[in-house]
Image (tube, rainbow, N blue to C red; front, side, top):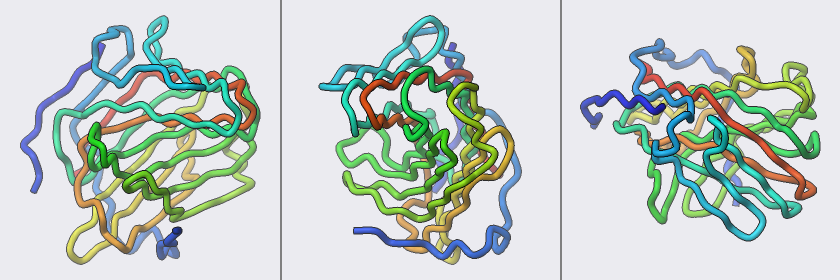
Length: 224
């Protein structure tokens, strides 16, 4: 079941300056604007098959399979609002594949268009994590980390949380990735491409082409 609560709309590799997460006041959690347990297959998440990938609703979850090595795919949904800051949480389980496979989430600034753009926050079960800016098909790494102990291996389910705070005239965008309640990576994007967000997504990448991941219990809150 998908619940969307309407809100009034709010008006190569470049590395960000990520020395401090505390320079900008982080908004507190606000109202829920989307909740989806994937029990209803008509809740408008993108579905489909490409050479090497398939994604769609399956037994009350959202399932992604990647059958080509070094292949990735993202699936998205509009949140029904345009917000300056949001918190996106979702359960993710890697059922098969390599510990070097990648799972994660996306905060979209332009969802569903040919110029999909936003921030991707992802990790691998071997302890790697990364935050990137995605723009016109290109990805620029803002922060990359390895050896994160909170990422405990591919057998369990992870609760992923992404806090995405859009850029303002005076402040860079701020992105934070949490896994099971622990902060894994934080980045700032000083170029300020994205002041607002209108969608969310999940992303899955396979090292060896034998990856299946399932996602469930998505919740999006506007941060205020």
